[in-house]
Amino acid sequence: MTPPLLFPAFAFIFGMVVGSFLNVCICRIPKDESIVSPPSHCPVCSYQIRWYDNIPVVSYILLRGKCRGCGAHISLQYPLVELLNGTLTLLLFLRFGPTLAFAALFLLCSSLVVVTFIDIEHQIIPDEISLSGIVIGFVLSFFLKGHSWLNSLLGILLGGGTLLLVAYAYQRLTGKDGMGGGDIKLLAMMGAYLGWKSVPFIIFASSLVGSLVGISIMLFQKKDSKLAIPFGPYLAFGALLYIFYGKPLIRWYLGLSGFGQG
Ligand SMILES: [Zn+2]
Image (cartoon, rainbow, N blue to C red):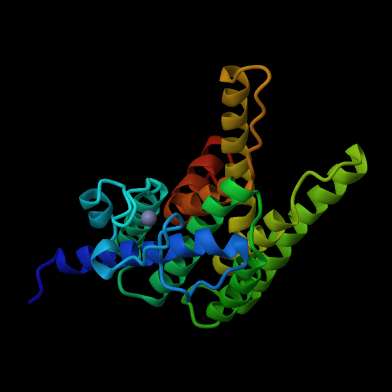
């Protein structure tokens, strides 16, 4: 007999340890640096971070957010990413248990965490993540229960195609580039993992939340300050919403509009 909390606790810790690696990806992928070498070091004094200074969240608290070598401030983003990934992993485990679906969605969610933080900071979504994610999502669809390669392929085409069309129309109408190519590949990756039905949901949810946030920023920000918000984080939020609440939300929405009655 194992204590009932052992596996969820393990999932949480595992997610935080992977989150620590995601921090490395977030820092290095935009700079085209290797994510395996050199070992983690302080960007200010190059102090090589020892294993006991690299325990997710705990080390940050013990070091009070400062480098052991030079005392430079360590970004709060590090423990935040670790906590976020730990929490997502725990929630996925509680929902899906020790299944292949859990492993696949864990991969997707971890990729989304990396994409979100890179997009906020650099306004790019690296092809290393989106394009490889499309391939991995498609391959996994052969093995996942309730999924199929056709569903995955349609997800890729619908996800990529819809945003490509939006980008094309926007460009023709305004003469400016609006939607980035990164967003197109990101939604194609989500379609590969989650199937074609997820695509309209993710577009609807991300546009809704994006508009609400955009309007509140317009209302509260000072006139001359300009804040560019990338769309990737909203797509990521839409995908998470679909993973955890997609089915009940779609049922609720169809009920409201009179569809799906009887
Ligand atoms: Zn340092």
